[in-house]
Picture 1 (spheres, rainbow, N blue to C red):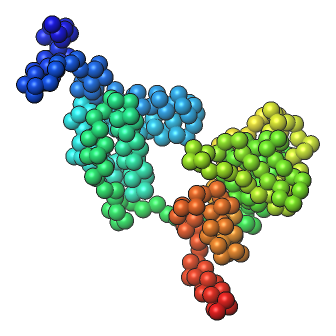
Picture 2: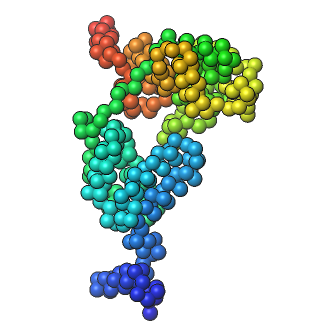
Picture 3: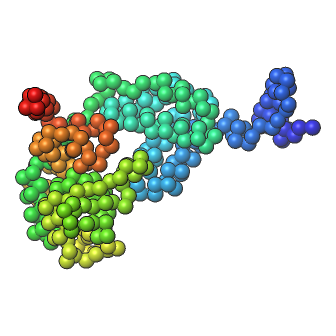
Length: 339
């Protein structure tokens, strides 16, 4: 006797056909697992909701990853919320891509969104909610090539003169914490989130190799150790905050004794730009400025990648190279000198 579930329910019919097929194949009958039954009736909307809640539980409600997951879930369910997961294939995937392109999103943004949708499906496979063939089917769809959608302008480095003007304006407003963070990012090329989260016990100023070792960072899940070397400018930025009120041991704090967020630094920069009338720039422009300066003075992309905290195999550092021919010429001359 095999119990198939409630009579005439979709689950019982699935169980019935599974038992019959195994019987005809000469195999002993077995019950279908409950998660296998759920896969047959799970919709894209339900999968997107479960994935978003899992991301939010892991990353927190206010993280950038959670925000991106929320946006991805909305785009995924706008027209395919009631579509069964087992019926979601390359054609539906391409339909979502065309829908996003029609909204004016850039090619890079569309490709990132499609990768996040694949990540959602892959998460469902790992949770045994989605058949494994779904992710293989979506992997067959290539990303948008150059010229097929709107292209974003390349990120530009901040103007050093504009940065110095804004720093002086912030110091004139007694906002030494924001000014110190800007000086620190300019000197080290670290991520804004790494600067705002820096604590005194993570900083080593004595010795021949002063450094800052963040407790957590973007590439920690890859097993990459992140150590930020501190030059004299970075040490001066840290020492300028010794007299400020500390919040939970943070190096850079607000004038009202509150911790900084990356958004607060960005808003401080925008206020300084409007007040001084200098060229517009953003906090990540400081990171770009540090990368291009390091490349121009060292001619070594590997060294610049190590400074920014990229993995050794990362090719992102190439976008910071203003003149790759100059780097190639420097390498050619070094070979000539060795010979």
